[in-house]
Image (cartoon, rainbow, N blue to C red; front, side, top):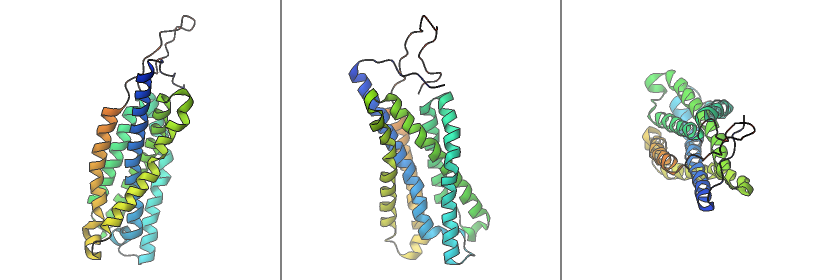
Amino acid sequence: MPQAAPVPGDAASRARDARRAGVTAFVGTTIEWFDFYIYGSASALVLGKIFFTGASPAVGTLAAFATFWVGFLARPLGGLIFGHFGDRYGRKKALVTTLTMMGAATFCVGLLPGYDQIGAAAPVLLILLRMIQGVAMGGEWGGAVLIATEYAPPKRKLLYGAFAQQGSPVGNLLATIAFLGIAQLPDAAFESWGWRVPFLFSAVLVAVGLFIRLAGSPRRPRCRPPSPVTSRSSCPSRPC
C-alpha cells in the first residue's frame, strides 16, 4: 500500500527536510558506488593474480570480472529485500543497514587472503562478499531515491530523486582517483598490499556516511488526523 504524503508544515521546515533527504541520499549512494566500483578497478588490475593464481593471466582477469558481474546479478535481490524491509520498518533503517553491509563487505575484501594462503576458499569468499555488495547496492539505490522523493517539494520530486543517481558517477570518479594514486606504487608493493588500501579506507567513508545518514536524515513526517469518513490517519505504517 503506498505511503501517504507528510502533512504540509511551514515552508522552511519542509525545505530543510527535503534538503536533508537529498543530501543524505547523495552521500550514501556516492559511498556505496565508490565501494562498488573500486572492486571493478581491482578486477582489471590485480584480483585475477591474487585469487585465481592457477589460471593464465587472461583467464584470471576474466574470472575476476565474472565475480564483478556477480554484484550486478545480486542487485535486484537487494531491491526486493530492502524494498520490503523499508516499507515495513522504515527507509532510514533500511538505508543504514545497506550502507553498513556494503562497508563491511568491502572492508573484508581488503583483508581477504589470496589463493596462495587459503586455496580455493579465497575465490569462494570473494564471490560471497561480492554478492553482499550487490545486495546492499540494490537496496541502497531504490531506498535512497524513495526517501529523497518522499520529502521533495511536490513539483521537484524528479530533481530530488536524481540526487541519488548522481552518486554513481561521483563514486566512479572517486574510485578511479583512488586507484590512480595507488597504482603509482611499485608493482610488487601494489600487488602485495597497495590494492587493499582503497578497500580498507572505505571503512572511514562508511563511518562518515553513517554519521551523516543518522544525524542528517529528516525528522519523522507529521500526520494528518483521522478522516471522519474513513477513520484512517495519513500516517505511514512505519516512519521513513
